[in-house]
Image (tube, rainbow, N blue to C red):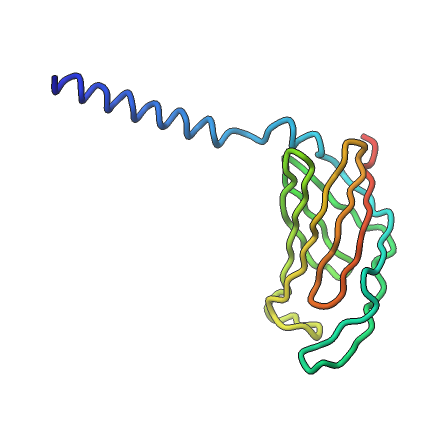
Length: 149
């Protein structure tokens, strides 16, 4: 009886290892369908002004005008913004996109260290990516188009 229990435990352990390996497999073909380089198309301000911690109103700047690429590879998205800010995130199997960037320590640019920017949106089956850039005060809706291979 003890021999059967020991053998069952060993089989169970190997079964768990196999299941764990199956779960950590490479990205699915569903998320890889969005892989490619996306060229910036346009950007629109969502709000014209924002208020700081002292309740002073400030105008929102103008969004980037182009030349910026967004790259998706194996479900991982990355983009370098107009001011060198590095955005990184993921693209899910349905095209859902989330990327984040934080203000690096020592480079304040008028913002507190750790200030976070978020890109949130989706890629559709035609290769159009629609996302909202959310910052401390100003927000923009952006459009990107997948470049042909």
